[in-house]
Image (cartoon, rainbow, N blue to C red):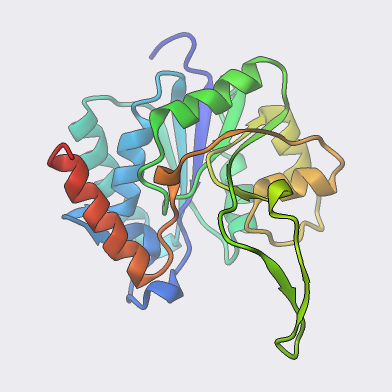
Length: 238
């Protein structure tokens, strides 16, 4: 392992993925005989600075997770230390459990969704490069293309937001290790789908880099169809 492999990637993969309508955790759903988890790990292993993986899965899926991890590493011909931990009921609990497995060599922590298997390597490297510049929290974002309106409980439009100032946030979200550890040391953490949101609550500045449309998140059956089509086109060189 390179002396500069000082980045740990945390993958919270304990979500059940109810919106996919499948009887298994979302990270273990397959695309062309590859699970989302294994595809995501394969992409993470392309990043030279990554020297440690921590993956949070449902407690009874630990052995299965090890099989998916092993396959990804064999395919990538690269092995790095991996810790598989029991995830919590919420994403926030899963990340908090994962941080207990950090190694002393981990200078930065990237929290990345298992359901985003196609994030370009340059997005990972851009997050790391900005952390190298001294920024404490870095997230990838893309412009919002739809018009966004606020709607009340009566399904009535309240107002229209200024789209020019809106961004959709993606992962990996990068943190200086001490900053993320300090955030998650709080005993009264509120569950969140966005770790950078916890930094905002703590008063820590969050910086951004350009994300990618290829970083889309697989949440619904339609997303899964789109991901399968996208992967087939990539494999066919289109």
